[in-house]
Amino acid sequence: MQITITIPALAPPHGGMRVIMEWANRLSRAHQVTLSVSQGDLSCRWFELAPQVGLRRGLAAADCTIITSPHTIDWQQTGKTFIFMQMAEHLFQPANRRWSAQCRRFYTSPHPLIAISQWNIRMLRETYSRTGEIFYTGNGVNLDHFPVSHQPKDGRVVLVEGWVCYNPTKDVGRVAPQVAERLKADGYRIVAFSQLPISDYFHVPDEYYLSPDLATMNALYDRATILLKASRCDARSCSPMEAMTKGTVTARAIVDGDDDLINYDNCLRTTYAAEPLYEVARRLLTDAPLRERLADNCRQHVQRYTWDHYMRQIEQILACREST
Image (cartoon, rainbow, N blue to C red; front, side, top):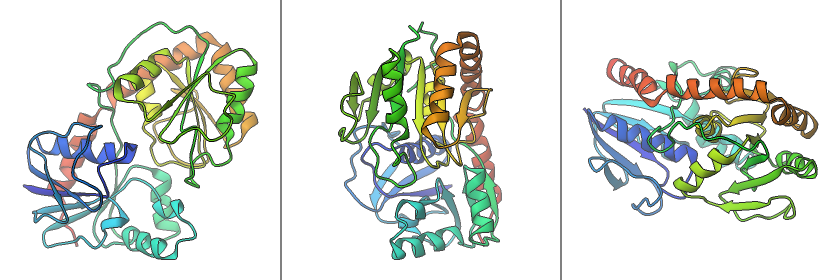
């Protein structure tokens, strides 16, 4: 089957882009796959696409088209069409009426929609009155890129993901830096990374990494005792799952999302506020037996819910369902 997957851009490094490229690589094992890019250049230096995956600007003809963003909702054609929704993207630009209208068209498309978050599905039905078919799946972790390891940890390193953010769904309340500041005062080493240069709380990180490469990311996850992550909402964030491969447990502050993170099973999660996040982070750092139990569950989770597991579901959806 000829499959076209739309993608907004190939750069910069981004979890949502990584997921689309994983789909392309894995589907290309059995299908002829083209990534249709809507903006930016056609080179990708941070992720290795399989050599058989085609790249082109604009839409490529196909038996099956997977539209992965409101950016390309107009890129529909004859044959099967699926909508792949990774996040409630209208929340990224709440004051942009044109973008909100484009997102509404994406959410309410008559084509079958594949979602990775239960709260996104509830939103589609309750807020947008979507009546079209919805399928639920998840994201795996590339265990070649992020191998499972059992490196000993010193119990003193707190890794903070997404230190700088301007997206209103993320940590715009600066909850994680506030908590990190308190943990630093408690004697812990704060290591932070982000896709943007550091812009505040300069005195807190002992180390700061801007757009770290794959080798650096693995080294950071290996060193970290816990991962500290705060955001208002996410569909299914990548970093906690990548950290799981190293037995690095996440202290998570969030209102909605991250279906993989199960409280007291493979993480500690709480509401989006500094005080409760500090409390669960301290609990993980000081209760070694609890942390080790959750760390074991983390490694088991990523080895059970692999990309192979999810791609079997996705292949079945693409093979058996016709767009309306």
